[in-house]
Length: 496
Image (cartoon, one colour):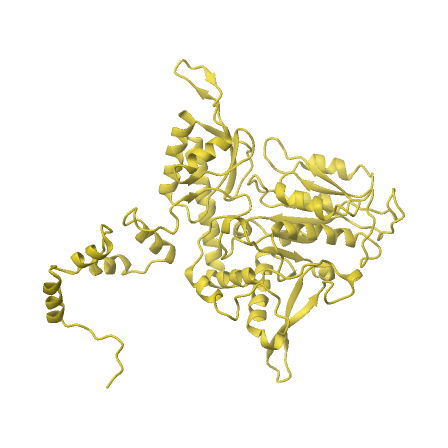
């Protein structure tokens, strides 16, 4: 006899059960069990799904049936600033929960960790292709730490003895005001003992891009050496930077002195500043040219958008990439592909420049582990995404953000903080209102109050930049109805 776990009931048996339970049909049965939650008939569902439907749309389909149904994305999230509300396919949670993957630690024994190492190798390959960079590691803690490590790598490159920390008194690293302020703070912390000065480059008041004329002026002063210039793309205010012009200025600057004017530290001859590009939203490189296209020396940014949740701010996934000639200055670990004794593909760490593996003086960082769990999630996500899918999602993010911005500007309550082009994030400031007597009066609602009142309406409206300016983003998780809801509620809050 077949070992059936469940025995199907005939229509006659089902009718008998209904009579016994004193109910008419299946709907009445489930109503007694589930209460007032509405049901979709099988025939209706077949019609809806007949042509196939993506997972994100399926979630929305069921969440729209009734407001009492638990929703995966009930609150509309328009907040970015480094962590974005992208859709995460369920298959990622399923695969990453396998015991082979479910650890953030380094696979120290390659002979028993081929699956994890293969996934990390694929992660490196995906990210290198997206960024247009030669080599990527696997991986860093988060974007802020990754950027600070890139600045330290640039400091080592500017020193004659690249293995040893140098006294960089008199040197200056220029950081655009468009760099995420949290990242800037971490750079200051990491470089605190080196003696290097961290100085900001202002943004153009109209476009919101890094002020090229000010950068030129500061680089031509000749007071001390400049190991690096840091630019974020798109910048913290959402504006797309002119990396082509910036790169030409940075790489045409030469530090020819043999020593720092304020110390006895020896330096390499004819050294140009390292051009470091950062990013908090790598999806932008599905639309705009990546940093490798602009001859960036280092890239350091955040990769949380790829298959990872917002998680109340962490854990995150730091991305780090460099030109191949700087590979030995990279922190963390690099997975390589080789052949084993049987001439089969094998994976191993080919570079691991941390103090646990090499002498302390030659270590490029003291990273004790890595975010390999999040990196594997990113690898799974990008393998599902495909090249065309990556571009499609990036384009959808771009379109939704522009629709949202236009909708908010049309309310007459907002005006642009900057006029430069943007990807999926932009900055607006509250506009002075006009009363019925056609006299202007300032809106007394602050940005923080606006965000708090919108949150009470199930809308995470953005990040306060100042008293009257807000940073707003849109991702593929935002629907057109969410945009209409944002505009409608913004009117009520600001006119209240």
